[in-house]
Length: 154
Image 1: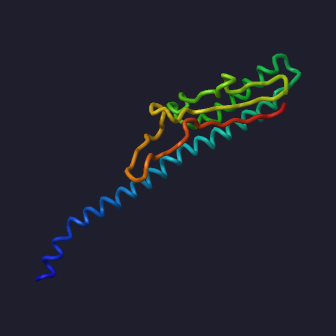
Image 2: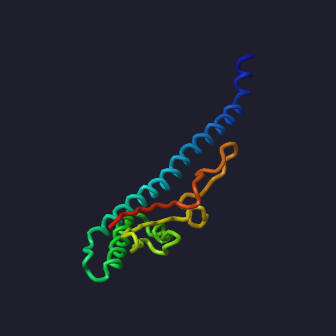
């Protein structure tokens, strides 16, 4: 009889343990998803910038308006590589500060710079909302800007 009374008193402890374990596993799964998507985006930015810079090499330097053609070809390839992203994500892509465009031909050094960025720190643009867990902190804890660039001498 004494054992039955003892077992009935443990029901609340199981609920408390379940809550603690659930929060831990939820934070783990949420962290896995919330870090995977931005890192996938960043790798896609790196790939797209590199492909855009390589595409500028294919432009014939003897063509009139070579610089503008190289910039246009690089920009078009960059945006084509990022076409897999949903339209809402692509709408928030920005050229990097400084050149004001996705591809910039620097005539003094015959170099093309292809650059793209995403302001992830803005809560309105965050793909996965940032959650703050007690004892764990903010998930995901990412930089304000996801940025990738590629430079190539032509």
